[in-house]
Image (cartoon, rainbow over all chains, first blue to last red; front, side, top):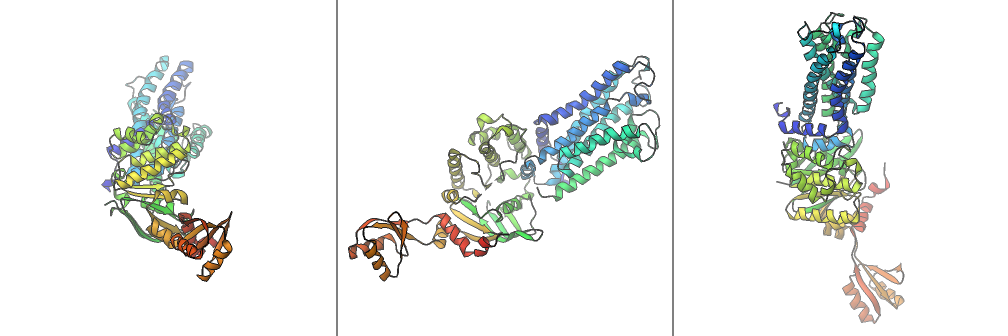
Length: 249
Length: 304
């Protein structure tokens, strides 16, 4: 099985494929721009209005922008994979890298690595920049849970991108995945609202966002919540792997 | 080591057999034409060779290896499957660069193959701005990246302009002369006749012929002689005595089967029949191909 692991040349090729597509690269940079940008603008506008104006959980409120940044992460994960289903590009890819597991793991690894790097920067920049405008309600960088939220938010974005990438490999269409996931992450939180408990707390976005909360909310803790999202992402990535291995290209 | 070996290769999709117990070899040093009507199994065979599809039974190997066992396959095999197989948003150069890098091929090869395919000027343009002919050239550039000993080209002349067709014809000749194995599928007889030294013909997934171009034409067509004469009536009578039939081909041209021009000329001279024009008609690959498919009537009459 070790022969199917990613190799440096194949990883390098996957990096070239990602950086050479304008839309995919834009989605990746949008993770940082949307999360930190919207966070900063919102904080500047209403951050000091009253306590809890950006959300009842002050730490999660420091990541209000991630509701938008995660859409960019989903778009990045989906478009990095859907590029293989344009014009039969996958056939060309598989003639160069006939080991489908190696190809798949390489692409997944490159997607994960890039979102993780951008995500960690995003986690830090979003927190620091957003808190500049919070006045008396600002959270200190050393406050409990802060470092966990910064690191965790980057992991959260990475897992959301992988969730989308795996689903795209199954559905073979980026558009299908986006039209499925974006309403899903936007609507579920909106409809269910802040209500704790129930099945909704196990939804990928709700569970994963536990890592950015300071106060307990429902049955999941910060890391167990992120773990639930990891299970979702892991299931999607596994399903994508099976689809890529089995289907004819 | 560049030999393609197809052994008892079978691929079923549901109840239909796209490829049915195929066995043949493709040898280096010559261009092998891969012929058959659409749906005969040419593309499926190529996809099975490249590991893009799995055979129901049998094997397809290159130099004794299954394609999927190659670590850096582009050094061994170059393939052009369809001209569309590149993402439209990438530049030609980035498309080739990703392929080269994945197989540890030096990046200078990218510029070399772009040059060889006549695409150097379009290297930094996005693939979606390309004409079909340019996409074919890009696909051929990709096939040449690793300087492979085996080339598999599926309908490479599709969409090429006359200049491009001559270019690819010469390129394939060159590659075969260099000792490479070249397998070219086509459904265009005229094109294949000019390209190939050897033929593999499929019909409904089965092997119909595997022989040299010359043997194929000789075996599946009848030699004819064409002529003009001022006295067709006497000529007809003379030929009838020999058991031959004169056929009116229109425009004062007559043809006869079963007697070469050399013999017919001396026969006419002996009889004192004036001949204005006399030549052996070279049977074409197309005639031979149609002759073959007529022999396998089930392939032409019982289409699904």
